[in-house]
Amino acid sequence: MSSIRTRLVVAAAAATALTIPLVVGHADAATTSATVKAAPAAAPAATSYTAAQVLAGIQQNSTAANKVNTKPHINTMTHSDVNVFQVAPGIYTYSSGMAIDTDGSDPDPDPDHQGETTWEDSNGQALGAHKVPFYVLGDDCWDRKTPCPHFYFKEHGMSGRQFALMFYNGKVIGSIFGDTQTANGQDTSDNDSRELGEASVKAAQLLGIPSSGTTGGVDNGVTLAMFSGPSWVVNGTNANLNTNAQALVQKALDTLGSSMNGGTPPTDPPTDPPPGGNSSYEAEASTLAGGTTITSCAHCSGGKKLSYLGSGGTATFNNVAKAAAGSYTMSVSFMSVGQSRSAVVTVNGVNQTVSFPATPDYNTVVTKDVTVQLKAGNNTIKFSNPSAGAPNLDRIVV
Image (tube, rainbow, N blue to C red; front, side, top):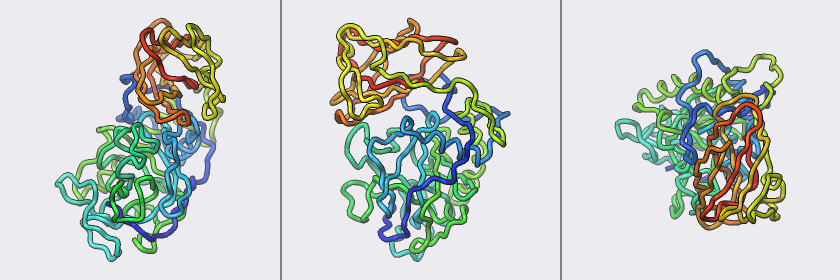
């Protein structure tokens, strides 16, 4: 496991913004609602994106509405805030600097070097930091809560050797999830599992970043885009994992670019965004019945939420407009304090039951994605539960 103690400062910052019109649009496929969605396995063959276009889309979609963590992560050495965003279905990003992880099967003069990594190659050998470009995530949920207030990889369909794009200073490389930051209860490091911003010697070398474990790294400008799901796990040995990861770079750029932009690559210079896109609908503006009430909520988007939904109480969102019929991802912001609760989501008369996980308190608003089939024009979306209480609702974005 990563055990860095005193390394170059790692400061959070995004790369230079580009105004490319990428927005989250249609769901690419109708996946099972209320489950963690993996990143799409491939982009349409005709779609081609550059690193600059995709990075611009990541920056544009790194918004409060897409933030995954409800408590900030910690930049490894500066302790400044870092946030994780879901910029497309199953794809998670953050921006930071880079400290250097020297751990694994390759020898290294770093006094903090360890001979093991959390994840191994396909032959069961510790990854070599000088051979394999890998990144580091927290080993557990520091808060010991479910769902975790921080980004915890196990809750998002990720496992060892999970592929990620890594951007820095006009370059992009492929990398894999190879090591973890210190878990709760371990005293081998001054760091903890909330921290982000560390990668292997090889990753630094490929990006042109100083790669010494004691004096290397950069303060800012590194962006990571992690692709969840088993189809994005990279197999191989220390001898070929780097080659295998780099072979996925263009596929990943095209997949992410297409997912953010509904399948149409942007042009240079950028054109105007296509009409439509996502719209936000506040729950307190919906039509209420059966005892559902509007209550104050300091942490909700409009300062209010719906309480007493379910057990006969309903909320109906009318005139949810879309230009084209299809499968869409509806993001539901909610609270379900103390226990999980279900809601019947009725879209144009068609019911589906969605389970919402427990949330820790009334200061924490959580977002859940639900796949819905919408028609062209105005749609009606109703939340109810005839037999039990449903979650408190903040808003929907679709």
